[in-house]
Structures are given as C-alpha cells and as structure tokens.
Length: 125
Image: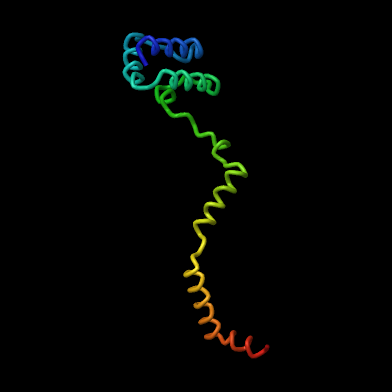
C-alpha cells in the first residue's frame, strides 16, 4: 500500500465511524498507518476494511485490516465425490500383497491349532 491508499483507508474509517474514530494528529497517524500497511497488498486491506465495516460497530485497528481472511469452513468440507475418491485411495493403500495375506492365514491357522478350533472343526465333518 502506498501513502495515498493509506490516506484513503483512514478517510473511509473516519466517514464510516463518525464520532468513534477521532484523529488528534493526522500527519502522525498517516505516517504510523502507512509504515504498518506498506508491506501489505492494497486489495487485501480494502477487502478487510469493507468486511470490517459490514460486521463491526467499532473502528478497525491495523491488526483488523492486515489479518488473513477467515477460513470458509463450508468450502473446506469435501463433497460426496471427493470423499469417495479419498476413501478409494485410502483403501488402495491398505491392500495386502499375496505374501501378506498368506502370512496372515498361516498365523490364523496357528491360533486355531493353539485354541483347538481347527481340530474340532475338522473332526466334526
């Protein structure tokens, strides 16, 4: 932001918050705000100023104008198709190799022998 844009921000605040934003020393106020806002994009500052004016009865501070836009949580929630794609990818990553499946079956067989389940089941046929 340049000095002219900073002055425009201050004028907008002054007009929007009449009686609530009183500047004692306009030159020093402009200097301080310009120094703080110079490294920020004017578009972001003006967008934050507009949003602040619409949502607050109190004049903004510099911090109010430089903060990032709040996260829109509704757009952060995936839709059904995106969820299905994620789950399909997750399931694919969890697929076992033939060797892993064989090892699991061998371990299950050992457990059945220890518990005597496999022998009883085989004898009942």
